[in-house]
Image 1 (cartoon, rainbow, N blue to C red):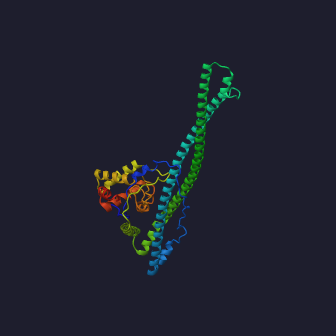
Image 2 (spheres, rainbow, N blue to C red; image 1 turned 135 degrees about the vertical axis):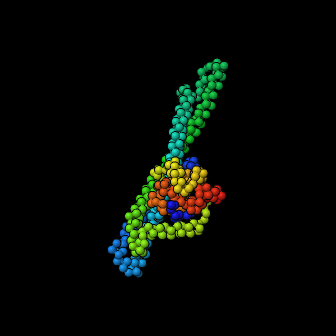
Image 3 (cartoon, one colour; image 1 turned 135 degrees about the horizontal axis):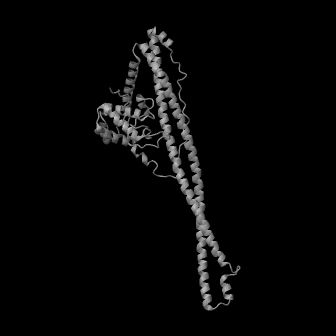
Length: 389
């Protein structure tokens, strides 16, 4: 039996173009200062009801309702905080990816300029030696003007003319060599200055990338802690709520999910349909296995009664959306993951590991497609017509 859809939202097209991200190298790349470390609004200090509290409240209808309302509020708070911190971890991870890409681009530029500066310095030294050799040859007469030396030497007319011609050519060569040496020296100096500036920028971006990574790691840790907090208390709270309302934990959880779905659908209707977007550099140190994701999706569509033709539509759809990368992030819209959930935390309805687990993302995406479009080919047709799904 298929799970009910718990989040509906249009997707914006455009993560397959992410490969163009690093195509151009820019000498100076501006990177925003990393955001402050994420501080979770911890529920660890929340006053969770004990079973004794629940039994005591159950004895009176009004206190039972008040206690039930408090438990619902705690569950909502745990869910919302986990979603908020999860989405923040995605954003900070994407920012860290951008910072890393900027550093790597600048490192390549700095290396190129450094090599050019080294070559220019070598060329300048060679030109200087060549010019020095010519000047030395011209001054071997002991400092006397070479033309006067020839006249005083009493050389024959033919010999004198030949030597004067050689001296003239030597002087021209000397002037050219001096000009070349000067130009080479100026070029070497300019490139050395550029190399120094490029290295300074490389160091700045390296520090920015390190800081951004630390911020992203802190955000990820905070999100993980929120998930752990939710997991540690969610089941017990639903059980307590069921006791107060004389139902079951499964009924209460299903009701909560249905309310989330209604809220998500209302949000979807109020949102713009989205449009073209591009993904940023993926968060660092997060494995992406497009081939494995495709294989899992192919094995999962059978539960919906879809055949190979529908899988081909799904391949095209999610290749366009995310290139099947679990960490695909659309910085213009905030959509995340293989199906480009907007925001990514909507996928928590399929699993708390929605940030990193391709199967969780695919399960959510297939559920979304089934409930909204009926099939992957229906979603693909809509995407072709509107640039989103």
